[in-house]
Each structure stands twice: as structure tokens, then as C-alpha cells.
Amino acid sequence: MKKDERAIRHDPFEIEQREWKQRQTKERLKQLLTIASPIFLLLLWEFLSRTGAIDIRFFPPPSAIIGTFFGMISSGEMASHIGVSLYRIFAGFLLGVIPGVIIGLLMGLYSPIRHFMSPIVMALMPIPTLALMPIIIILLGIGDLSKVVTIAGSVFFPVVINTVAGVINIDSIYLDVAKNYGASKWDFFWKIALPGALPVMLEGIQMGQAIALLTIVAAEMMGATSGIGYLIWTSYKAFLLQEMYVGLILISFFGYLFSLLLRGIQKKLLPWR
Image 1 (cartoon, rainbow, N blue to C red):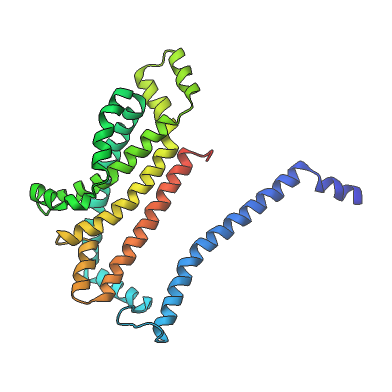
Image 2: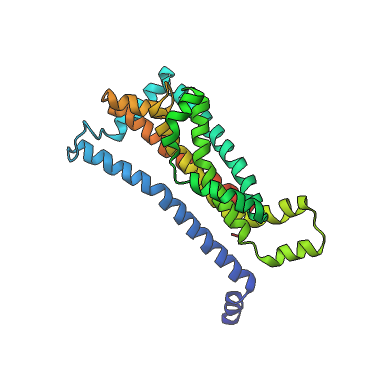
């Protein structure tokens, strides 16, 4: 029996199974901790509000905020704000990411384009897009287009910079092999530059989605008649803090959701990472 037990303990299949179970347990623990932290924060907030440790005029309990949220949903007010903001975020995000990736790949691959574009990118990047909002509103009005362009401008620069860095950091051996085998410019672009730059590029896109959420709130505060940012600003001015917190929590939720979606896409595209 002891020999059989030792054989089982040293069986490669059994060892692999134990390691797989340990990895699964660790993954479940990580997922549990990820869910537990926001729940803990909300419970602590609720407790402090109910016990009077914090002023409920400025920090209403989460249960009251949730009640306000469902009241706004039932009235139809919330759906319009969410729909408008999501449209602006997605449109601006795509309008910033697609040109950012293409220009970043061209700048990384071709030195003349990089030298031509770098001064323009470096000169415009430090200027906050929101600082240009008055000019954008003058040119495009206070409709959706001005918000979309503002978000696109904010997203464009981190995507360009990260894409260029990703292409430049591709191991030269891949570029030499492609040249030696007579790869066309099309193959060079899609089969060498894009996959090679993808890890760093996706980090830039991840940063871009966070910037898009920051920008939409500020843009809708400055010149809009709808959207989550508009809801936050008008609720603050009217001292309707429960409605204001609803808007803030919605932005936080969408930021977390978009981050998870992009991380999922990254795992699919880059399973080795």
C-alpha cells in the first residue's frame, strides 16, 4: 500500500491535477477579493451614514442612492442620460483609436513619417482637449459632434504614443526575416507591425478608455443638455446629492465594465501574456 501511495504521489498526471486545482483555487480567491472590495466599501459607507459618523446631507447612504437610481429608471430619465453618454463615448473612442492605431503604426514603421509627425504630436499632446472645448463648441455647436470630437482628441494621443513605442520595440530579427523573405508592405503592416505592437498598443487603448470617461463627464458639464455628466452637474447645482451620486457611481461602473471587457479582449488576442 505504501508503494502504491508513493507511486500515486509521484504520478505526473496526479501532480498536474493538484497544480491545476491549486491554480483554480487561487483564481477563485482573486475573483472573490475583486468582488469583496467594492461591497465592503459600500457596507462601510452605509454603516457610517446610518450611525451618523458622516453627514448624510453630503454622504447619503448607498441604499438611498440605489432607491433614487431605480426611481430615475422607472421615470425613464436615466435611460436617456445613459444612452446619450454611451453613444458619445463609443463614437469618440472609435474616432480616436482607429486613426491613432493607423498613424502610430505608420510612424513606427517609417522614419520619414515619424520625423514629420512627431513635432505635431508632441506639440499638441500637452494641451488638454478640454481646454480646446470652447473652440470646438464654436466650430461644431453644443450637439453630440462636439462631445465626440473632444473625446476622440483625448483618446488619440495615448494610443498613438503607445502604438509607436510598440512598433519600435519589435525585435529587429522579425523585421529582418520579413525583408529577407520579400514580405510586401501590406504583409509587413498587418503580420509584423500590428501583432508586434499589440501588447503595448492595447495598454494605450486601455488608458484611452479611462480618459474617454473622464472627458465625457467634463464635456457634458460644460456644454450639454443631457448625459451623465450633465446629470452630475445639474444635480450638484440643485443640491440633489443622491442624483449626483447616481451619476458618479454610473461612471465608475462603466469604467470598471469597459476595463474588464478590454482585459478580456487582451487575453483573447494575447493568450501568452
